[in-house]
Length: 300
Ligand code: HEC
Ligand code: HEC
Image (cartoon, rainbow, N blue to C red):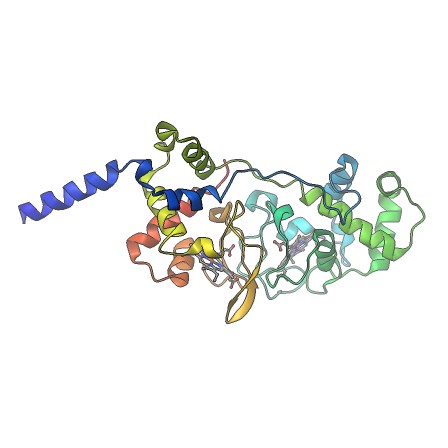
């Protein structure tokens, strides 16, 4: 009995002391692919006001404008709540009625290539028009949105888009473009993982040692045995593609994922432990380590 305990303690001490350099060159190569962060910010070629300060400002006001909804009561921020990582902490969204899907976070949305859980849309501004017209979400019409802009935002609109009067359809598209310009500004800062990754790249063992060992073990599983990186790849932790898991869903990015429970397209999994357990054949301790790693993807 005593011998056994001593052995267990010795094993624990060994794992606790394992240095960062314990990662193999192949593991390090895979880890480096998850950075650097932040990636270069490029303007959206499909949005002529992308990156313009006046458009970002107008988009921010529209994001918090309940009058855009048909009933005057729902705003983008009703579901994409800023202090909740721009989601709503509900399994499924609720606007004017219960919707079918979980509200995704809008943090780092500018890096997505496809939008919506099914990845059906390929432009941020087109995706931003959808909730305005969706009856269960904001239930507006193009004529309603255009009237709100003409009445309350005419000078800002003219200054950003250089046209007034404009048709209802032109205004609707431009509202989508201003909203997109604002959402492009929602880029989160660096995380403990990013500092570790950059330390590995520099070969700086002292700096790398600041990253908790449980997170390091979770990371090793993430890029190795768990094969999570196969789908959750790159600096955003998504291939940007759509994966087939019975039904086809876009692979979600994992930055700040610890802030955006519940999970999956239908919000069916309440915790990260549930997701990682559901996704893989890992044992309980490995699941905990992967969760610790996922938590280290949270920006301060
Ligand atoms: C009723 C809640 C609700 C409201 C209000 C709402 N959204 Fe959403 N949003 C959702 C849901 C649910 C999805 C996922 C839709 C899907 O999968 O098709 C989503 C998806 C998105 C996406 C795609 C994100 C991604 O990662 O693919 C963007 C961008 C977005 N919304 C922007 C907005 C903007 C801009 C507004 C206001 C004009 C808005 N939303 C209003 C619930 C809402
Ligand atoms: C075959 C591709 C694939 C692999 C491999 C994979 N995932 Fe996923 N992951 C997905 C898809 C697709 C979803 C969204 C599924 C849905 O909405 O129903 C998802 C969802 C998630 C979510 C929930 C994100 C959210 O915002 O709701 C987390 C967390 C996650 N995966 C972590 C992992 C981890 C950890 C591993 C490795 C153990 C892993 N994934 C392996 C494709 C994959």
